[in-house]
Structures are given as C-alpha cells and as structure tokens.
Image 1: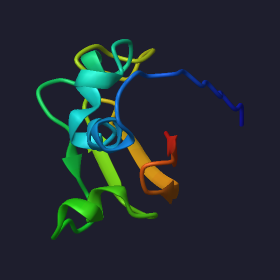
Image 2: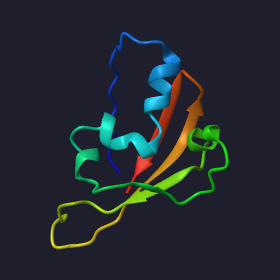
Image 3: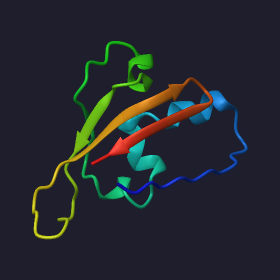
Length: 94
C-alpha cells in the first residue's frame, strides 16, 4: 500500500482548523477528492458527541459522484487511525 504525506501551514488557531477536519466537512477541505463524494458523507461509527468524530476508529463512507474504473457505485470509506486533539490526525481511505 502506498503512503501519501502532506504538511501545510495555516494561519488560523488550531481549534478552528481542527473543527474543519471532521469527515462530515470533507467536501470543504479536500477540494480534489471530497468534491466528488456526492451530497453527503455518513458516519458508520457511533457519534454521540462532537469529539466522537475525531476519535481513533471513527469511520465514514460516501458514494462518489463519478465512477472509479469500471465500478459504477464504488463506496469510499475513511477511518481515523491516529488522533491528537488540535495537533495531529491520521486516517486511511479505501
């Protein structure tokens, strides 16, 4: 499996940036991939509080607007694999 890493500097308080990283806001922050995920991304793990969106093991899925290869209704899934509030978040996609 390949690995992609990217770092950027954002001139905003860490709390504001952290709020944007919730998966249900992916269409706002991932302008290449997120825009293609249709109307919404749904959490497939239980979310009872806003902090649950950022916990390790939180999962979401969405159906892309455009087909991937010969798969017409491919489902994209994401899972948080590391999370340190206001500092670092790592997820995998498949």
